[in-house]
Length: 165
Image 1 (cartoon, rainbow, N blue to C red):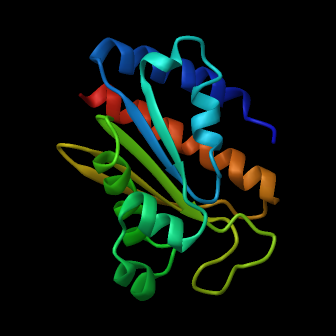
Image 2 (tube, helix red, strand yellow):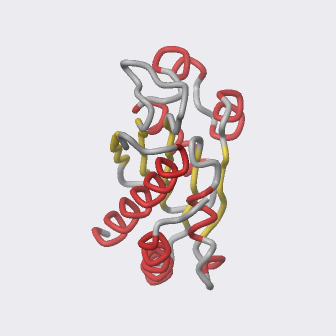
Image 3 (cartoon, rainbow, N blue to C red):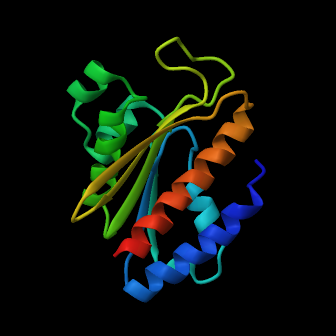
């Protein structure tokens, strides 16, 4: 897995911002399988702000580890806005974090459909004050690129939220 050059500098900025605010961060990852947490922990001093990461690739893991209601997964699917939001909420509720980020998507090369194409990623970001979602479609990229772009976008979302606080 090759990280984007910008991802490490974003991770450094996140560790600094979160440390200044005394905030802990948790991740809930499906399509990236822990790459966001791994990127954040590349930075020295990250143990002061990274609480934990949930790798919830299966629906069972999403329900068990993040306490996502089964009906959300049945009605909307694993790759959906409601699931991304529930993952972010679940990571916050099941950790000591003040901010959580979640990602669920279709990295490819297979698994896509007309409604949910390869490259579709849903993001959730939760704090005690709010719940933000975003949707990106990383078209015409291979699996590694979709995952790297997902990590980079998730880190950008965290920075934006930390700067607003």
